Amino acid sequence: TAQEKPQIAEVVAVGPGKTGDDGAIVPVALKVGDRVIAAKYAGTEVKIDGEEYTIVRQSDILATVE
Image 1 (cartoon, one colour):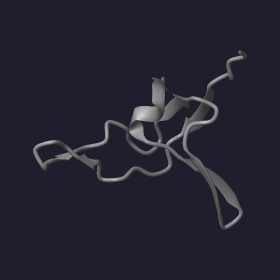
Image 2: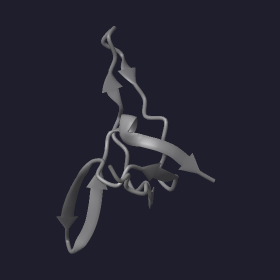
Image 3: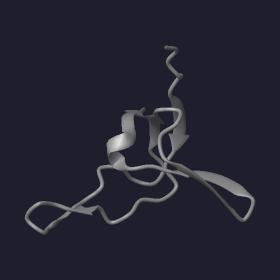
Image 4: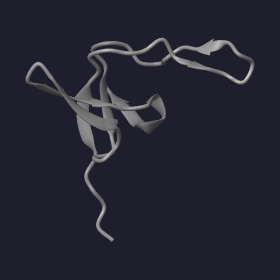
């Protein structure tokens, strides 16, 4: 099977994190402005005010780019 090339994107917003097993919030390791690599079909694509965004889970991020 053919593999898709990953895509580079810029983080424009992050949520507060997720609830861990002990009930505490585990903060997101990314911040606005970070450049990241995600698999081509990761996340959900949405269109807001004419702009296209992809919403992805932190676990779907493959790497950060510096």
